[in-house]
Image (tube, rainbow, N blue to C red):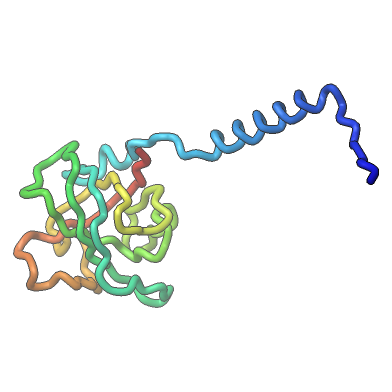
Length: 164
């Protein structure tokens, strides 16, 4: 039986090492860098600013361009940057949550935005808020927490994703 040997270049190990190094650099560049969510808008809009973890989105987020509404979501406050919050659980109304925050402003609600692309439970957000929602937004509100809590509903003006 004859064995066939494939000649390997004496530089093959260097090529392999360089290839592995390139893959490692590529993977490292794809990882998300930490971001506190701080920007000029979130630190100045509203009377309250918090970093909070989105605990739950009850009900389906409606993705219908003909329907404008606020959807109330449940958060755990991790840090208060400005203003005063009573307790560590808050309920926040987000305007047209199916839209990215950077494109959600319209003729009805102008001072609203952020860098958040989609709402996902367990994500952490830095949010500029006002309270109560009824003083700042007069429109449809989907509140699946109605009757569950006597706490006020906050109005989200600016919502940025926090990356730790």
